[in-house]
View (cartoon, rainbow, N blue to C red):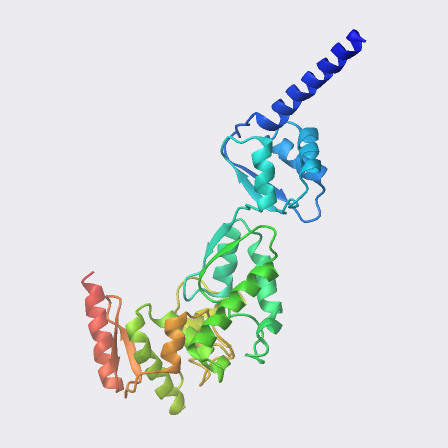
Length: 326
């Protein structure tokens, strides 16, 4: 009887020591360790992934602990481990869903190709996969922009936090939701496609918010008089779509055969050329009242506006002079 008791005590001590080793002793990760736990993973699969990454000591101890603490369930997602922690703390993190978010910054004026590149740089997938979604999921905006053939213009510039378990479709949905929120704030509920298309050109023409109503007035005046917009950014976008843009425009590019080429075709292009921010949308909805038909850079980050071609030529000469001094 005494031997049986001693054996039982030995087993209990060994089990306790194993649990202390497997659950309570902290593990020091070797640098930053990212572990991606996909939806549908079993507890044992999760434990194996954690053990393989070197952030827990024992798969069996982790599974046993979870069997005794099933609520709340463990959350799928990507987790970053970089500090000392024991298996119990790690289990608690997974139960809370303390997942790692990748920050994606989308500045005003980014087009869908720029956004795709930003998503890839953030480690969230291939740029080409996002481009496919953005060009195929126009139905996400069909109620506001029934003629849209892509999500260009409706992927609102913002800072987003995404996880690696989100699909490219999920990310596009979040950007479109943000566009809808801003459009609602601005009262943009009519002529949405026209407004967004013109706002995208304005966004690409100037980074100075206070100039945008004047830039908008130039294009509104030209549209009213049926004068070609002659917007360089639209030509660049036309070449981007064709994969022929070389980083700079030349005289021959102005004859590039595309509906997005506003030197060749009067009126607005068939859709947005970038994703405008709130300021450009506001400027398009409320353009300044001017007699301007032309504008050109002043060489210092702003623009000079003019009502006649003669004035415009003088402003162009002034720009050349400024540039020659630099």
